[in-house]
Every structure is written in C-alpha cells, then in structure tokens.
Length: 312
Image (cartoon, rainbow, N blue to C red; front, side, top):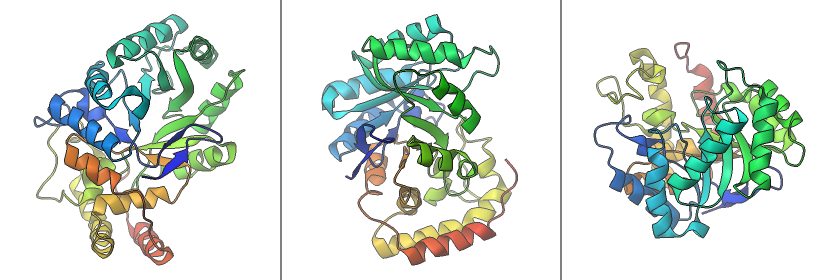
C-alpha cells in the first residue's frame, strides 16, 4: 500500500481509504450485515488501508458502532479514524455533544479527523461558531485534525478565516469519472492551498464497476433514485465502462480499480470507496501500487469528452 500526506504537511494516510457508509444499516441493501462490514474493515487494515471514514449521520451512529468492534480487533494504532459531525449539530454546544457521542460509539479517546459533514443551510449557524468549537476540541485533545465535507471554495475560505491555530486538513467531496464538478474550482483551490481531498463515491456508487446495466440496476434506498442509474445515463456510460474493462484486463485489474487509479493520478486526492464485504475491501486495496499510462489516460479522457449524461 502506498501512503500519502493528507494535505500539506498533514498526516500520512493510505492512498486508498475505506468508506463505512454501508455499515449504517440497510440503506445500501438487504444483504448488508454488520459482521460483513466489520470484516471488510479488518481486511482493509490487513492490506494496509489505515484511513477509514464514517459519520454520525450513517445510521444514526450505527456505522461508528460497527467500526468500534473492528478497531478493537485490529488495534487503535492501525486506524486513522475520520468521522463527521452532522450539519444539524453545528452550534458550539451541539458540536461538543456530537463529538462526545462519536467518541463513545467508536470506543476511542481521540478522533484523527473530525469533519463538518455539510454547511448548514437551514439553521444558518455562523461558521465562526462551528470552527471555534472545533478548535476547542482540538485543544482539549478530543480531535487531531479539522476537516470539512461538501464545501465549496467560498465556504472553505470562510471556515479557514475563523481558524486561528490550525488549518483545514481536507475537504471530502463527491468525485469520480462521471461526476467532476469539483474540478472547476474545488480541486485547483485545494491543490494550491495544500488541502487534501477525500473523494467519496469514487466509482459512482458502483456504476463504474461494470456490475450494472439497463437490465440490472441497484434497488437499495441509497441508489434506487440516483441520477447516475437513470437508463439514459447507464447507456451513455457504457463505452467508458467497456474501456475500463479493457484496460483492466491488460493490467489484471477490475474496472473499479481502473476508475480508482484514474483518481489517484492526483497526489492530493484520496479515494474512499465503500465496502460491505471483505472481497470488496480487497478489491479497493488493489487499486493502489500501480498507475495508468499516459496513453491510457488520454484514451479515457477522449471517451469522457464524448460522454453526455442527463443533468443531475
């Protein structure tokens, strides 16, 4: 497994992380089982993945509870724990309570990366209050690093302006070959400012794995209404999936691993694909340690330029 700095001078983490949203309950399908998710995390750590991401919002903390069992089995020192405070808990007292609850569910004394899950559009809590509360938690030894998630550049600038003793370590955003809005502003800004990127949904919630087509679509709550799986979009993405499969055969890799390697060409981007079974965790880990050639990247980019999806 390769390891990279998360942000400029930031902590060393595995080049591929593991997302534990799937461990939040049955939202990802009736076949999701706590024991399988726990074993997936244990297998990921065994293969060198140390960054594991969750959130209090995933099954109202259930994902964190599942993670706690795996942490006990693999050892706290082998896991870089990233979790998130929900956008409804951004007032200072709520931030403190949410952090305490996450620490208890995870069974640890300190969270490595504590992220604001999304900006608050409803309560209109000033970011200054939230950032000051996070710095207080850092001073108290409850969290090591501060991050955000789903933040636009304007939001990151404001958040950073209210941090007096530290800086943002990372911004977790949706990023995959088909959903690339962050390339316009967020990626260039983060690269310039030394802020790491955690890429959620790096294989398009499974579409880029090659497992789905118009005759087979996911039926779970998370993906059943996902725009990516509209019949027109599944058809439009088929040439790309075929090319991922062709390149994968050359390298002995799966289409999903090729899609992850495409993201890994950015040194400051750490994909965090999910895994609800040990085999998926192993597949994720296999995306590291190799790279696409310049010719392959050019060919993929040519297909992407021709790919037209329905507006999301």
